[in-house]
Amino acid sequence: CYRSTMSKVKLTDEQKGYYQRVEGILESYDDLQEDSDVFFGNFLDQMRSDSLERVFCDFIASRVAEKVFQMCDIKSDVAVALVQEVRECFPALCTSRCGSHVLETLLVQIYSGRELQDGDPLVEGMLCLAELALEDIKEKIKDPRASHVIRCILQLLGGIQVVEQILRSTVSMQYRSKKAIDVASNGKLQQEGLIKEKWNVPDTFAEMLQKFVKTFCKKKHILKVLLQENASPVYQTALIVTAERVPSACEQLCRKIVGCFGDKSDCSLPVLFSDPIGSHVVEVLFQIQVSGMGKEIYQQFVKGSINQMAVHPIANYILQQLIVHSNGEQIADILKEISFGEVLSSGQYGVLVKLAEVCTREADNQALFMKSLSSNFPSGTKDLLRSLLSLQTVTQEKEELVIELQGALLVQCLVQFEAVVSSLVDSLLKMEHPHHLQLACHVNGSHVIESFMKSKTLSAAQKGSIIQKYKPNLTALSKDKYGSRVVDSLWSNSAVSDKKDIAEELVKHEDEIKMDYYGKFVLRNCQIDFYKRKQLVWQSKQQSKKKKLDLFEDILEDNPLVDGGPLKVGKKRKSTYLESDSKSKKSKHKAKLKTV
Image (cartoon, rainbow, N blue to C red; front, side):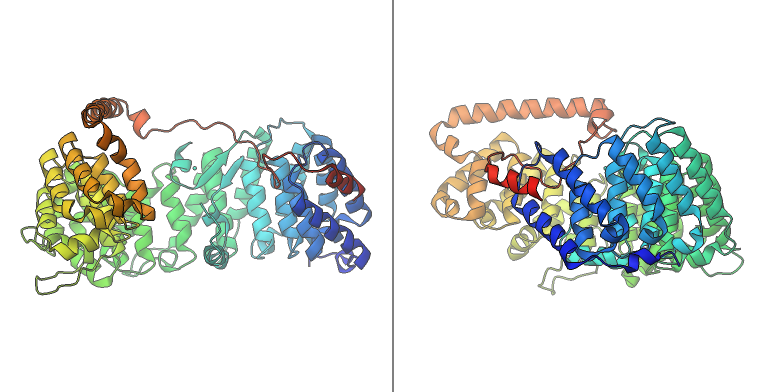
């Protein structure tokens, strides 16, 4: 219903040929700094003569236009003209398979990171586009293409770039994962991993955001909207943006969403908790932490249903977000209510890992956590570590070593518990020789050994015992992709005397190790060549380095802002599509470019 008649008129073969030639030259040209204004002006003239809507909606021309917009710096006067032209065909572009992508790219290149003031023509242009987006928004947010445009406009109004996991649908994320495309942050929400970048925006943009929220809150059947795969991410984006820019509007939208949870008079979970699409909205509610909303949801809808959520394949992710954002008192209540046995039987191990992670900072709850864990994994047995790694009770008769990802993560947290670390170290030292090697050379197990060596709860003597246990295997570990990292960790977290033992063992097999791809890096990191030539100087340098590291750790402990506090990040320069350090192309490329 948004498409205009003009989009049905396609570009001619001659017009398409022009854009194909432009694309070919762009691919073979690395430096466009000197001629970008001339090239961009000529390209815009050609695009206008062919009709901007037709170009944006054509498969070939739209791809070229998107590359050009990413590559060139769009000046303010040109940007104003482009926004004006886009307004005339905005409804058609929103639902176009190609036009929607170009429209998003163009708007991001114009508004992202640009400091604007009220009264600026670009501000007026964005407000007009937002008004057009609000027209029949009920249908737009359900459209697979128009919904992306709405999310883009919400971000630009808030001066925020939201992470890809929120912006993209499940199908899109799966595709990008298969193609190995990176899908990746200072403020509270940036630490949560919801926001990638922020910039200042005019006050009128905040007023427009409030208008969007009022429109979203007017919907009668909001539950159906939150369960729709295209509309749900729009609400998630609105929550994140307004939480950062207009907290009052965010709280209004949160209460509207919580209102559709229903009355917890029966034993069943709210629909949003168990739905694979709607559950993401509830997760965002916990992540943005608006005026105690998380505590309210916990008291009304979660308390008393902990076990039911923990074993549910969808709701357990909501419980994990609740655990991460709970205080010590709530964690204690959850630990008293949850049944570790049921969680282990269901296979939803992520809940246990999150509880362990939180208990590393909430030390008062560590004893309660271990009390629940020890009923399933007795801490006095020598097979404790093997049981935790496999998340199953094992016996000595079972020779194989099973390492689950969640089990490895759980052990990395438990190593920081003072009450259980000695049992874990003893269990590690009592493991069979083949298991030691298998653990260190495993993609997940190698991180377990690193966590032992980096933990502050282990004494120097305990770390020395681990090093002596792995000393006969140093040559084999040095030649393994993951084992070499374990050797580096053993080296960097050991005392000088232990470093000397490691160096002597590596020197014995230096010829064999340096022929291996990973082994040569181990020799370099451990400074074996320097050790062979000047042992006394080497030992003196290691002692001096150790003292400096200890002093630096003391400084970090005294100043939490240096260790893990929010750090200010400077404004990033916009990346260009064809940016390169090389500026030595021949002049004939420039001539071709000007001709096109």
